[in-house]
Length: 410
Image 1 (tube, rainbow, N blue to C red):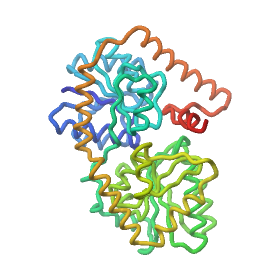
Image 2 (image 1 turned 180 degrees about the horizontal axis):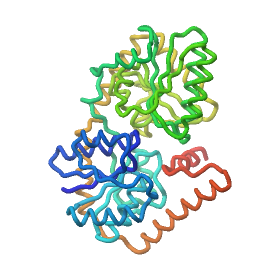
Image 3 (image 1 turned 135 degrees about the vertical axis):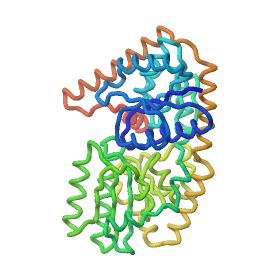
Image 4 (image 1 turned 90 degrees about the vertical axis):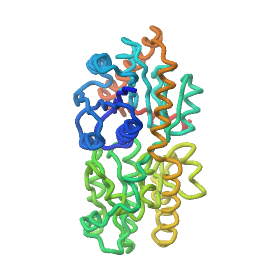
């Protein structure tokens, strides 16, 4: 097959890594994969993966009429069999572009915790957790597949050397290194990052030899920087390090004693054989072990608690790990086995190819009523965003996790 994989950005993030890594693994199965995306931090990773990188403008609207047109031309010129959009803006570009104009089969992957309500119900969908898959079927999507966020278990493994990362932080050999790798954004991530800074600061003030390394960048950097600065000022030394975005974050995972994270970052931590504390919102922090893993496999590597800042929950998860090296080792081995057995990249690629074949066999031209519904839904979403900005209200999130959280609270 000739396949276009359209990633929603080239910033460091789980969905983007999945687009590249599954694309590379799919190409290894004998298919031709083009990756459509802007230039960005992950562009060298695309090149290293051996994927042809078709570039789009960083300053485009999302969705973009210009991309719809250029994507349609690309499909015609290169004999593309299917277009695969990661997250809703690329999916809409593909559906209103080559699918509407040429009838080209389109499939969408949504790795967020919720799916945009205006996506076409006839478009095949792939999600990352079983609970969301079932909900999408209830919501009327006709074809919903499941691919749990895969991990390259060879590139991400306990054998990777993290010593240089620890040395760069100038940590004592017995320092307990807590690592979180994520985008610094207000949706989903910021609350937990601030709690992690405060909690590690309190533990350090009580005499614990502990250090928190935050790897990532994004629009909430100033808030995280302020929190880290306050903790370090109180401690009189560097207890929290804000390291910015690393094109290759593997040294950070490899160096960690304990990983904090959600989604794909949580899975990568497990792949390195590290004990994992899953981060969520509204005070959610939970250790991944034999008693809790079924919750994450069913509902995703995230959680929503009942409120509060979560400091006590995080501390309760951290302290047993800090005090018990054998527990850290056993949970690390448990997590590594889980990833190897269930989340391998090769298995995900084979499943993805099967979804492509099904999508091609079931593809039908878009109906005028559905085109109108999708166009109206996208327009309404952006009108709400503009009004929110004008009125200085919280801006609706493009990944629709905010909407999902509200539903779960009600």
